[in-house]
Image (cartoon, rainbow over all chains, first blue to last red; front, side, top):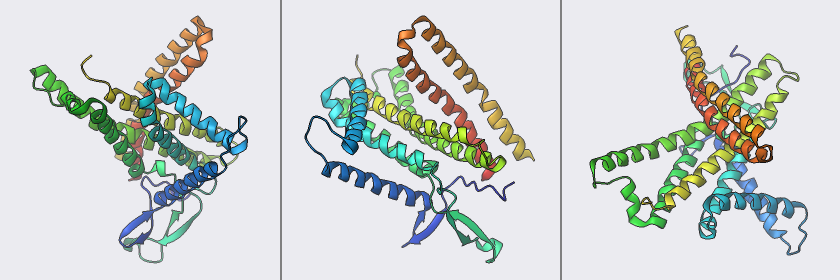
Length: 256
Length: 71
């Protein structure tokens, strides 16, 4: 069964640059970042100030406006929206494109044959795909989760001040002390649940597509591609919404 | 052989909870839509978000199963 199926739970190394291993997930996420930056620059250069924006500008304005309204509907404050919006929009767009990459033709199928490890001898080669959806690499999702939870603390300190830490360390009475301990644990759990939710959904999607393509290459995988488009969008939205809600909760004072 | 059993057990048991959860979620959402069809859009969005959270728990089990199978 494993002869025809190529499933790897971790990103495979392509090459090494000065001791730093470059994996296929690194490569595709860097390419995606560059494309997004180029798109942003293209939109900025073509920006015209008229009342009926057209084409690219119209699409960009629609996306930005939707995300802005989403942020505003959670925070209910222009000041906070202006602080959170760039991060939220960045998270959403970057994750969305990275999720959708996994269903592009060529991703995971075009690759190179590298010599296998010394254990198997030099004649054997292993197939290494050139591209891999970065969301299907735990390093990528873990980095985003750490960023999101770290920024939650930063916004908490920014808006509530040092009394933000009262949430975690509180000696006023024994119950509050244990509640603080639980809060610390829940912050750590947030990182794990963020990382595993995104990674699990996208990686499971990849495995699902690989298995259905392996069992029945015609027609049958088609609805699963539709499902993956949907799941990619929903997971990007879930990550963004949760980050937004946590940011907003951290900015509210703990004493009601 | 024992790993295969562990894989099947992990995903099989792990899917029970989210299955029940998603069932309750969609059932309640349909009930709400039946009572108040004008709020369909809002209920649907929140329902899908809730399903994504419930589904994530099955996904954790799936990740464990896949790690056991492929690592």
